[in-house]
Length: 163
Image 1: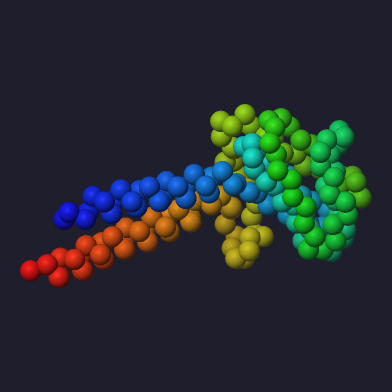
Image 2: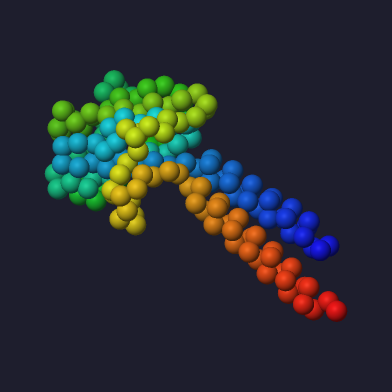
């Protein structure tokens, strides 16, 4: 009983630490298929890294339409390009090899990213699932469950040893 409060406090502190670290390092993936960007329109918070991955057979690139910061060079199949968006604003881009391929990234003022279906990437995750990418909160939930389970196990073991 006397260990319950310290275990809860330590578990809460660790979960909060990992939760804030996970949210600060947000990343989004855009797949480049043969003649399309998936997702073509993103809304993200400042500090988000967007990674474009060419999953198509044709070469592609990511180039700002207005002389902005995006300039990937040619990406062959499997090639990637990443850019971290720090400043709020709208960043339009296209594939200069195939100019009909267009996309945009809107960076909010930090008040929150859009969760609409058009801003999520489907089907090209590392685990092969068809679920949308939702960020990194699953690590936090797993750690919280692990810590609570360890605390309950420890409490049970302590109770058995004390006469």
